[in-house]
Image (spheres, rainbow, N blue to C red):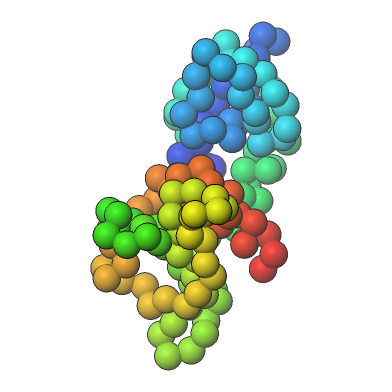
Amino acid sequence: MLGATQSSWGSVRDGKWHITVNATPSWACRERSLCGVEFTPVNVTHAEMPPTNEHHICRQCIRANSRRLSRLRHVRCYDNGGKTADRYTAVYMDVDEGRGLYGARGMSEHPSHPQGVGMYCTAMPGRHLGKRIAFDQLPPDCQRLVLADRSES
């Protein structure tokens, strides 16, 4: 099992399947895998495991995905639908700041843009932050920022 987040897989000409960095890979463009391979997919699937036997699956991608999932185990993501500039919030449930507050990251769609929002803060998890969403539903720039935060902790 790969975990709660959805994985997308792409295969290369030799038949080996890789987990793509992009959550929605396409045949029309080059993709990058979690193990660093750049390729144009021959096939794509959004299943938990690709439709193939085990020796055609990239083991480096599986290990990278396991590390990625373990870093996200204690992250809760929220989307307030654009009511505020920091539309997305990632709450780090393993960073207890006391009094029901946890380390968090408030973000706009492009948090590293000069006019974007990507502030580290504290937050109390709950509906006041918006609708709870899966990590994969965050915009790619937000996902990168959260993964960077988690690799430092």
